[in-house]
Image 1 (cartoon, rainbow, N blue to C red):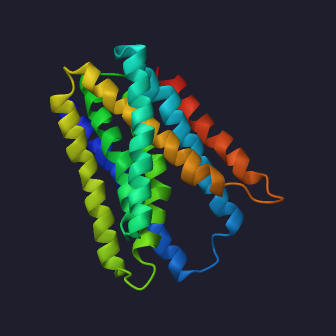
Image 2 (image 1 turned 135 degrees about the horizontal axis):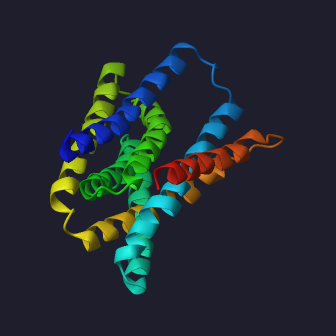
Length: 238
């Protein structure tokens, strides 16, 4: 298998988790109540742990290797500010695509980085693909619920088609990263750190505040489990 094919398959598998998340949301619609509140919060916590692992073990370290400290700090802070602005615009507009666009803000830059890392043979590339897939699953779940709720709800087939289109952006971004960023480590570092800043913003703005439940201990342990998954994957691939 050549490197480009490998990149396309890895990104496609990570993107497929978006559609799988939508399908699972559809199952919940057919069987209301099967996923209780504590399980929901625990899943969100696992996602937070996985996202934090992606930043701490893959994205930020690789970005910091090729950029000097002032540029790295500017990229990280700029990513947080960029995601804050997009988050505010989407919430103010009440757009039905808010969850979808938030998901793509994670997925597309990470897929770009994935393609470039596979082109250079970086062992952490497969770990990144796994972490992307793990975060895409619940994000696809939430995006489906967003698309099919309210007065202007989309039909099931249309909502799943939207998620399928999002999944296809992953291989396209990976191919672009593979072909355009492999000889531009500084550009790749900028993308990784901007994505890191955005992910940290989303984690502490949207995910972490929704995790805590009174008299429930599984959600915080879920965050530990999510980071543990990332750490073990990092140790096995480096």
